[in-house]
Structure formats: C-alpha cells, structure tokens
Image (cartoon, rainbow over all chains, first blue to last red; front, top):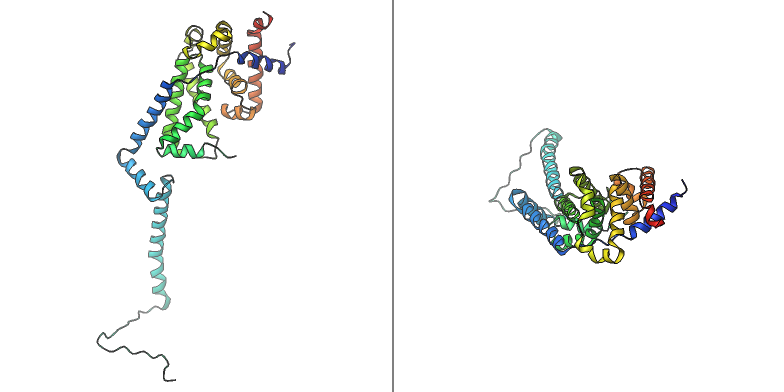
Length: 115
Length: 180
C-alpha cells in the first residue's frame, strides 16, 4: 500500500491526459438533428398534434396541460355557480316576485322634483 | 440552482430546431467523450449518443425543471445507453477497443503514441462499469464528487469508494508505463 489515494488520483489524471481527444463528426451532428426533425414531424401529426398546436395558439409557451387545466377549472366554476346560486336566490324569501311593465304607457319617474 | 438549459429544452420540446441545435452543440462533445471512454469504440459511442439524443427529443416536451439539472439527466441517459451496449456484447468490447482505429483521433494518436493511448484505453475498458464511469466523470470530465454521485445515482461515499478502487486498479495495471 505504498501509494496515497491522492497520488493514485494524480497518476490517473496524468494517464487520462494522454488519451486522444474525441472529435464530433459532422455526420453524427446531422444524424442527431435528423432524428429531431423526425420526432417533430411525428409530434405534429394526428389529433394530438392538432391539440398541441391549438394549446400553443391559446397559451403560447406553456405546456399543453396548462390551457387544459384552465379550461377544466373554469368548467368546474361554471357548474358550481350554475347549480348553487339560483337555489340560494330561490330560498331567500320563498316567494316569486312578478313585475309587469306596460309598454304602451308613458314612463313615469319621480325624481323628487316637486319636493 | 438555476439550470442554464431549461429554456432550450422547453423550446426544443415545442419543436424549435435552433434550440435543439444549441443543446446539441453544448452537450454533444461531452456526451460523446463519456460514451467513447465507456465503450472504447467510436462507432458504438456514436450509436449510444444518438439513442440518448433521440430520448431527449421525445422527452423534451415533458421535461420538468427543478428535479435535476438537465446535464445530469443527459449524462445518466448516455451512461444507461452505454451499460445496455456493454451488457449486450461484453466479450467484444476489449477487442474492439484495441483493434478498431479511431479515424477522427488518428492524428492525436500519432502525436501521443498510439500504443500508449491504446494501453491506457484498454486499462480503462477493463475496469468494472461503475468504477469506469466514476473515473471518467471525475478524472476526465471534471465533474465534482457531488455531481458525479448524482449522475450515478449513488451516495458521495459510494462514489469515493468506486474512485478509490478504480484508481488503484489503474495504477497497478499501468504501473509498468511509469517505471518504463
């Protein structure tokens, strides 16, 4: 065990420094970009692609779940308001109020002009 | 911690080719180097890296920042692709490392002494997978211990143990080069 751990580390550093540099070929870069294009074409095809484009138009830059969640949330709010509010109004005084307006009579306003 | 790649990944996920190109330019050299050193073969390394980038393109739209740095995730994907290839044909790897010339690195090999470089590469290729990955990440890619441990999905102590064993094996295996 004559070698200290640090000495081993320095030796490994020295050895690995002698390895040749790995170069990236143009063909590899082109292949990788071609795979990106294939994935992009596949993603934009079909119903999913249409939904994704629609989501991007409604809420640019956001992931698709965000506009979907906003729509679902507003739907829930609408259903809740639509079911709860009329019941509260109906239960407020328990009787219906009838209002009638005679369309052929002249309007009469009392704006306290005689007082 | 701010991930410098978050915006590029999100744009690539939306089909932005320029963002994909920028991501590739930023990470491809490092990823190819890791794969090359792990597999000891340029063609295999290029295939592994292509597979990793294909996985990146298909997952970019679902990428969630904040869980891990993008680069850490990509290193992990590349290493997993390398492990898959090593397990598929374990017997062939050393022969290929010794026999197949790397045309891209030919000039460097001549300068540094191709026999020496091949000896070192063969010693590296003989290390167990996890030790090799730890040595490559920490000694060749310049990753810190915390980052390397995160990439390998292990504790820092476990990483240090892998490094220690890997360094010792390499020292023994390459000892004659120093003496000679």
